[in-house]
Image 1 (cartoon, rainbow, N blue to C red):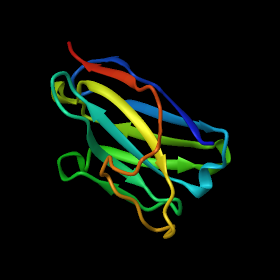
Image 2 (image 1 turned 135 degrees about the vertical axis):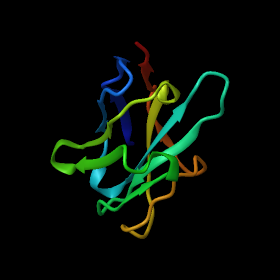
Image 3 (image 1 turned 135 degrees about the horizontal axis):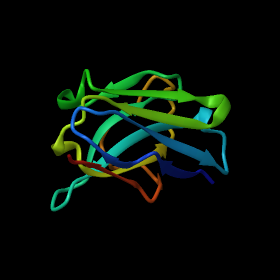
Image 4 (image 1 turned 180 degrees about the vertical axis):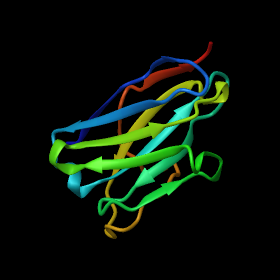
Length: 126
């Protein structure tokens, strides 16, 4: 069974960058699409990006140009690079895995993602 662990969060100044990692174990990540989600205080969890098992990325419109999702199947890891951080990026960031029959496909909807990590906190503050 796939297990994922997020890392890389922390306290970052506005305008800075951070790279989050989603490390998998228990299964080969090649077979899974992976999504990144975040939950800010007092808000619902939202899907911000996903990457298909073949490596095709998908982004929420509001993060396009600042967020980059990549995967390194050899390391069983998916990354989320976040640049030009803003205070509104402050949240707990989660990754999760899901399997689709189509290797080109992924969705940012929370529904269907079965394998979740515990999250990593990103705080953007000066």
